[in-house]
Image (cartoon, rainbow, N blue to C red; front, side):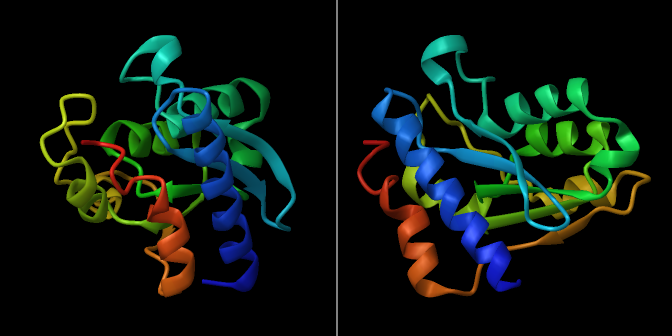
Amino acid sequence: MTEMDKKLLMRTSEIAHEAMERGNHPFGALLAYKDGNILMEQGNEFTNGGSAYHAETLLLLKAGAKYSPQFLKECTLYSNFEPCCMCTGALYWTNVGRLVFGATEKDLLRFTGDNEENPTFSLSSREVVKHGQKDIAIEGPTDDESLLEIICRDHVGFWK
């Protein structure tokens, strides 16, 4: 994971915090071109559409409508937490070529427990992609402990 990746993951944490301040779940995603230029940002919108309005899926649906599959192949989706199977499917179908996430789905489960607002899957994005026919690069979780702490900060106590 490059320093640029870590910087962009930090931004997803800021997006997640902004979403939480609006009354949503603390998840954030962004789409960047291969040079690191941010093309789109999206926070969770639980209060606007329910539990299927994940930041990653919303962002990817918008990106798929705006950019060609060939362009998106050169892009990276950044997410503060590992995308669920629905969001990984949206990544797959929009043809985004790379995923970088900060914390794993298993990390998230430690925070959410059995909270009915986020019944976390025990299915990694790598496992979802492995069963497809596309070559999607996946990097994560971060090995930067201070970044991981920042990413997880808003989830501590949130799901109680």
